[in-house]
Amino acid sequence: MGSLSIWHWIVVIAVVLLLFGRGKISELMGDVAQGIKAFKKGMSDDEAAKAETPPVDPKIINHQSTTPPPAGAAPTSTSSTAAGAQQRS
Image (cartoon, rainbow, N blue to C red; front, side):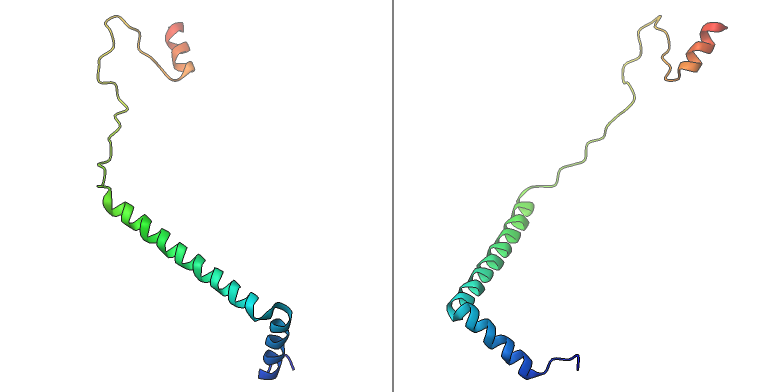
């Protein structure tokens, strides 16, 4: 009772053809085919662009200062409680 037989599908297809017409459906399928071709062309263009660019060496970021602090400069601290403890003693 819940399954559709071949006759149900034939009736559905006939109704769709009557509503939209043969020209409209073939036009729609042509548009779908053009979209697929454009998608494939875009994907191949992306792969070609990746192949043309040479791989870039990763840059190393050095977070430590390479120059020593000036003489007589106070050491810097990120914690405000550590700075307060140094001033009190």
